[in-house]
Every structure is written in C-alpha cells, then in structure tokens.
Image (cartoon, rainbow, N blue to C red; front, side, top):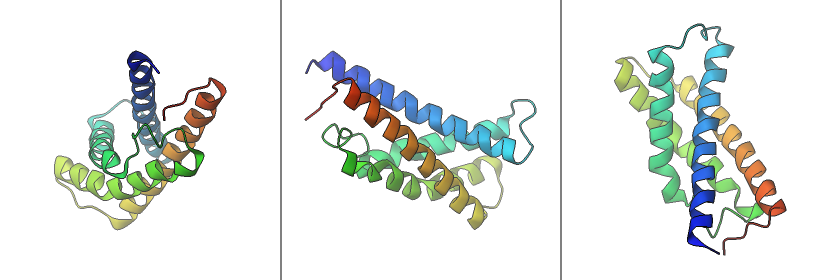
Length: 135
C-alpha cells in the first residue's frame, strides 16, 4: 500500500476522532441547555479532551495500523478514552480553576468513549467496504 494512501487514512481517522470529540462537547453543552453562543467554556472542555485523547490513545495503540482494520480491536479507542477522561477533566479543571466532579469524569469518559467507538465502527465498515487493508 502506498505511503500517501496510508497517511490519508490516518488523517481521516484523526480528523474523525477530533470531530467526534467536538460533537461530544457540543452535545454535552446542549444537554445542559448551555449551547447558546460559542464560549470559551466549550473550548475549555474540547481542547483538554482532545489533548488527553492524543496523549493517551497512542499508548493503547488506538492508531496502530495493524489494529485499526481489525474488528476485534475496536475496544482500543474505547479503552483509551476511558483512560484519557481523568486527564481531560484535570486539564479542564486547571484551565477553569475549578473543582473536578467525579460524576463529570465518569460521564465525560463514558459518552466520549461510546462516541469514539461508534465513529471507529463506521470507519472500520467504510474501510472494509473500500478495501482498506493495513497489515
């Protein structure tokens, strides 16, 4: 497989992950009727969430080319987000200089992990349909 083709798929995967986390953030604010105008609080949730994801996911091999095209490896991004949620909440707490509620960590991690899992399932099935194979 061509290197440029692999790079394109990794970019699509990363952009999809970022979009999924952005939508999760927007969903959370909408759920709490705080959507209104775009605010720095929304960024204070999204940026730490994305940063924690990008720091933790590689260690769980959520971007490993040998795993992203295997259905039985779809647990990796889910587990990576569960592990990244406490870091994301801590980073958000530091940014906003506020306390970190344990229920926030649980909900943030659970909803984000589920959203990433669903995105990665879509990515898997589209990739399978298009004949994407990595290893």
